[in-house]
Amino acid sequence: MTNRQQVYEGKAKILYTTEDPDIFLSYFKDDATAFNAKKKGSIAKKGEMNCAIASHLFRQLEARGIPTHFIDQPSANEMRVKAVKIVPLEVVVRNIAAGSLCQQTGIPLGTLLKQPLVEFYYKNDALGDPLLTRDRLLLLELATPEQLAQLDQMAREINTLLQEFFDQCGITLVDFKLEFGLDRDQRLVLADEISPDTCRLWNQAETDPTRRVMDKDRFRHDLGEVEAAYDQVMQRVLAHQL
Ligand code: TMP
Image 1 (cartoon, rainbow, N blue to C red):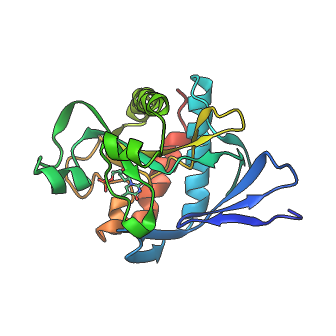
Image 2: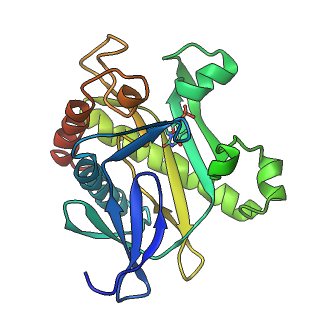
């Protein structure tokens, strides 16, 4: 594409301008990081797989009434998206205890939560993306109280839809991270990506705690067969509709 300029380079994607000021191009990289980039590596074909998975999931969510930044997927590694202003929050939804929830609370891995837990983290690499309280979030003016209520509601709706979708794929949606942006009308839209990089996904056909893992935890904890797990998620996701 001509005249494109880099807007932002993140750990997994690069965002470029296009001829249209309302449209950005998001390029999905094979680079993988974990633990705030203390661990670095690469996963073969991850860019293509995550771009395909995220594009399909955004289409499914749009069809069920969730506004997203997704426009289309012009090539294997590229997604055209609406040029939104990213809200500097990582909105995490948890259905089953894993990861930092277990580390910070002592709740055993795999505990089914009575209701989904929605948490807000400050998207700030220098500070290590800390967990926020509601009052700290408002103190930092990262969102208005109205936006916060809307983010919570959208995250719960998306969780219900994604749980139903992944269940059809024979996959349990353990937890995931969302990012939102504000469009030119100040409307909140789902942004970034939804992929095995940003979700914990467990294969329902496996009970073994290592074998069931189909997401970036395979990379984080050196469980092996990372590409094969991502590929399996992609095959199943692309074969299903909400
Ligand atoms: P956590 O248990 O490490 O807090 O992660 C919760 C979920 O959020 C998990 O599905 C992985 C995802 N996540 C990201 O997408 N990016 C991040 O930087 C972190 C820490 C977690």
